[in-house]
Image (cartoon, rainbow, N blue to C red):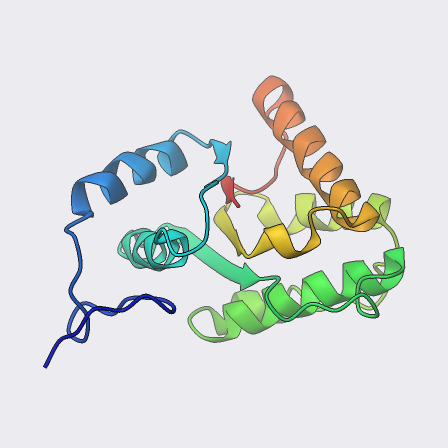
Amino acid sequence: MRKFNVTGICVPNMHYMVDISEKIEKIFALVEDSNYFTFNRGRQYGKTTTLGRLKKRIAEESDYICVSISFQYSTEKIISDEEGFCQWLLRKIHRALLLEHKEEAKLWLEESITDFEKLDHFITERCKNKKIVLIVDDSDRVINNYLFVRLLDVLKSKYLKKSALKYYTFQSVIF
């Protein structure tokens, strides 16, 4: 029996839901166009549910690799220094890929990534000739963290280079 859910991700066979399939197709078009974008709404507006549906839609396309991570359980200790942040991020990506892309997951564990410059080059190499979509949920939990802002700088720089120079990076990044 279905019920109303106001405490987390909605599951169609368990919860009453609005049909968002048209919205998902519009968002998927942004992914196909290589856009980087954010979802910015208050609590309980369906952001996580929408991201989950988008992940399923991306997975329907065989040429895409979707990586969905969350900052929900991040702690200041984990993300308090540059090396720790880079390693934490790569472990999150690795774990997310293990579920559906085991061979790709093996490529994302690299202990020599100790700063954002190395992370930048590492992402370039891992994204070469691939359509990898990075979905990051609950980034609002670290929005004031200096290292998270540095990550945003790296991603912005990569996006601008990608557009201008045919530089390799994520197909799309969604926060």
